[in-house]
Length: 162
Image (cartoon, rainbow, N blue to C red; front, side, top):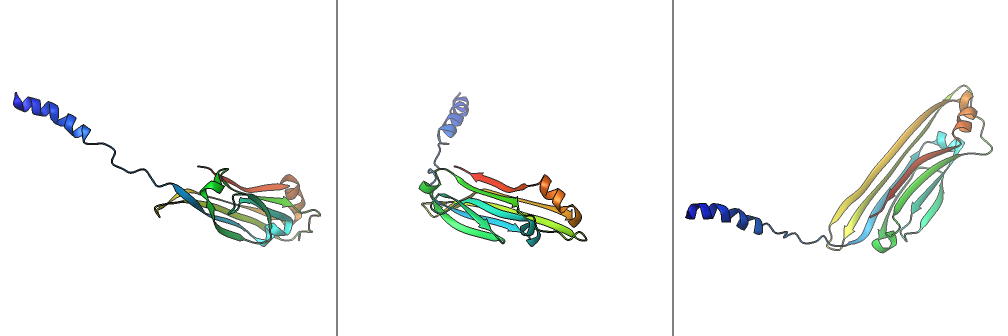
């Protein structure tokens, strides 16, 4: 009988000993953000590239880009209330530059956004990591048609919010 009582009580004791001893995670103090907007000179020959991104102040900034642009910055947690974004858009140039009808143009881009949450206790955790790439190969003789059918190319539209 004593053995049976022990078998019945032992699981209860084990379950009550399984309390949550983990301490709550330290609060996030800031976010370390890495942005990359990479594109080739062929894309910038026919398109104007603009990046819209969250700056260190938390404000959204619009910036024209003329070349590949990596950015690393720290956004305080209270400044990131509205989230962290990276949007890159290529808009066809007006007037459209003349394309060499005898060659092929490679219109390439690659974008990336990584966000790491930095905690008060010194720990950090990657909370967002996305990338997007695309390439269009266009014959010079078809560039006007291509740009008419693709007046805007959304290169990326990344968004992180806690």
